[in-house]
Amino acid sequence: MGRPRQYDLADLLGHARDLWIERGVDGLTIRALSSASGASNGAVYHAFGSRDGLLARVWAEEAGRFLAFQRDRVAEAMCEGDATAAIVAAALAPAAYAKDDEDGARLLLAATADDLLTSELDEEGRTQLLQLQKELGALLVELASALWERGDRAAVTIVRHCVVTLPGALLLKADRITDPLAQHSLEHAVRGIAAAPPAGPTPGPR
Image (tube, rainbow, N blue to C red):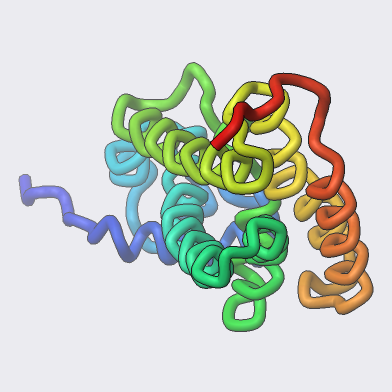
């Protein structure tokens, strides 16, 4: 008996990403990926462990690229010493990312790491998502500290709404993620929130 054919993981992920973009998250299945890639169902299961593992790996690949992009946008704003501009840059990062890859931005906004952390995940998929959560959490704390000199739960939660919740609600539901009206609404919503810190600890003298 011949040895089973080996498939490149990057190639499988590329086919999987295309399926998610073309058919939505419900259209990305083990069977669909097998058909699109030519790999057997067994080979796909071996690569990802489960459908949940497949979804997590595809999203995590996109999220890793996006987080690096988002951090660069925030760093540019921080260099000017403007914390409000930095949180606006973080919130608008999906729209900026979409200028070069709108499909990737839509894939990213369609789920969160929390959505994908299921009991069916293998250790590799879980570790990848938890690392992304850790990196995002560090960015949220950095922004809350720059805005209000606070890193408590209330402050970080408000920043999360600005950087994660509002972009998903406004940009994903627009006709296009790059829609200027959606971006205008998002920017001014975030600026308004940044101007009104949540009740909680007050910073001490510096």
